[in-house]
Length: 290
Figure 1 (tube, helix red, strand yellow):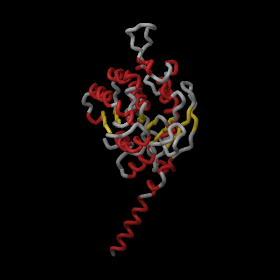
Figure 2 (cartoon, one colour):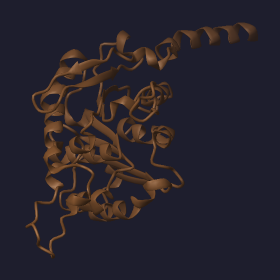
Figure 3 (cartoon, helix red, strand yellow):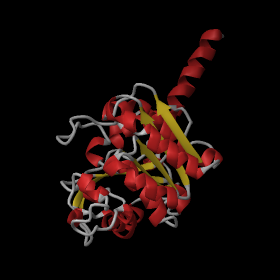
Figure 4 (cartoon, one colour):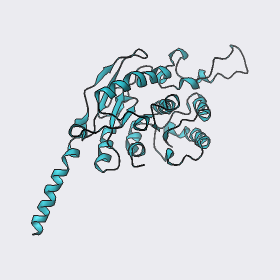
């Protein structure tokens, strides 16, 4: 009798498992080139959750920057990847998060320019004024290449409508999210300021607040994003410089409860390896039970 019960349990497990037993890489769709009138065309790759093919439901969407690093293949740009789809598939199988579609958007050779919160850039100073502190001269990018607003227009006016047409998406801001690291964290938070009616949440890992002596953080203090926001940083390598800037913006935000999360990861470095090790935390923030 006990043997029959064990056999029945095993058969039930096999019946329940197929939706999540497949290799998460099976959900990767072919890469495609997204044309744009705002920024240079770029590669995009979508990942569909395990039950997408067998359901008729609609899904929330996370747009991820630095798309070369999002899935399995280490990119020539960094040599590493986050394997975000594998972490998300695991969380879905454990029923810790809602299934979601991932949209990885490649960067290009103007990465810093496109990920720069454009409205935060200090104005030009009068040449030769000894009292002027042009913080921008401390940045490794030319003013003429700043294209943060154009990049967001590409996401909002061109890429999102394309994704919404091709896939069964939940289209409102509650279900349209962003995730990025370093400069990708800055542009994710900036998107919530610029387009609160489009994006409702963002996860910003190792946000590049220190760039240009922190002028972006000071701008964000005056223009705090709405929506739900997750910030984190490590204390190793150059992530160690983030803490004081993050503390300032956390203080400006006040108590927003679960809508604003800020976490430190002792010893974590500024790298894809570190972000991959903790990506389940921001994914759970974005997609977990409210």
